[in-house]
Image 1 (cartoon, helix red, strand yellow):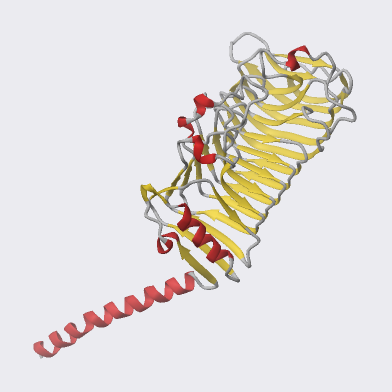
Image 2 (tube, one colour; image 1 turned 90 degrees about the vertical axis):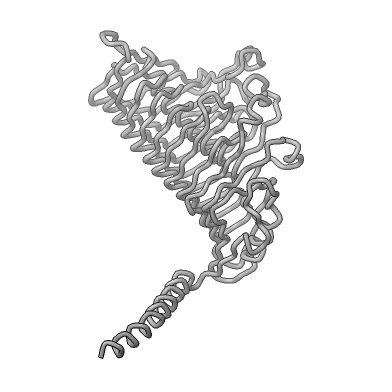
Length: 412
């Protein structure tokens, strides 16, 4: 009897193992159902942090892009060196880039000759970038070469990630680290979501804007942590229907519209909602910035709402600056003509916290095109120095509405 049971037991182990192998394979097939997978390792990637894996990535992308249905380019854990690459569409189906590893940009700027960005997603309709991995821009090797903070005619360093002329794109659960210039630029695109992304660069890293939007519509930046040396989010000309929500910003220069009005023929900015954000230790809070001068007719900024925002030791928590000039010695310092950009219908609501400057609300509008339709409601901004009251300053504000708690007292 015992021998019989032992033999049945000996037979059971391989049967159980076979069952689990079949079950695992079935689960994998279900997970990949309707999706073709293209692993960059199968196309020659080495993932040793030293070898140039660019060609392997392009081969995997081209094969996936040419496949109908849903296709995924899979990048396993490891370190991959990438030269400037363009992941170009249009593709036959919906594309996914599943990044689990770390992508590292070239240190030498000579590698970017002819390229203004490191990773360029271009002309794609339907893309998901996810996977928990990191885009390492290696900016620390180049920041000392950036002349843009002092030279208005500088040559910008390369952007880390560009979304150019894309639609229906989501970037989520990845990190952008130490870009050489902007981390992410969205230009000429529609229906883009940046969700639960981490963006990091040191406080003193120049022009490392977190996300810059230009000429694009229906863009959402949500539940994202941004710490940079420049604007956490910057909204440029031609932007419409933009949502920024649940963003933590700091260090950095705040959440900004602009700069605008520097170049002729700029398009309007219409429809921006910034809500449920926290800014900590930033050089500005929520800001609209336009250059002095410019050619008429100027562009229009309209339909903006900043609400439910917490400031933690922030300089200039609420600011409209229509005399923007970041250069100490530049033609804009000698420009006497006021900005031609027209600002209207802007609401600041339920903004509270601690200001690192005594002037907590500064609305410095253009003498040529005064701001109108401004609203301040439920503002509670206390000065970091106890016992000293915060102040508000207004210039060229053509009426407006103020109500609820107002600390500092409204100047409109």
